[in-house]
Image (cartoon, rainbow, N blue to C red):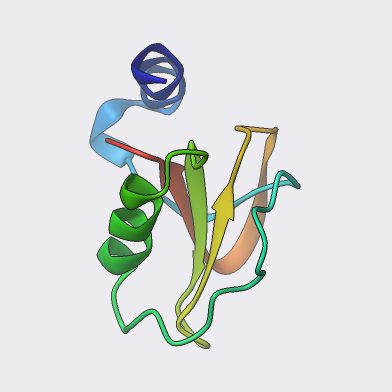
Length: 88
């Protein structure tokens, strides 16, 4: 997992992690989304860190919703979403 996290941070530049206006496609761990995470992307990342199957996350600020990801699929541009690996 550490190697995968390192590769994705390296790919986008570690100073830009998490990635604003980005979404990891697919790989959602149910239940999805996880609503009411809080007004901060950090809570979503911490939830990912507490879930062994999670390798990445996507957070939607407007709904405070969090999607935990079992894979680091291609990342796409999606306004209002922030994504990142389990650890930055």
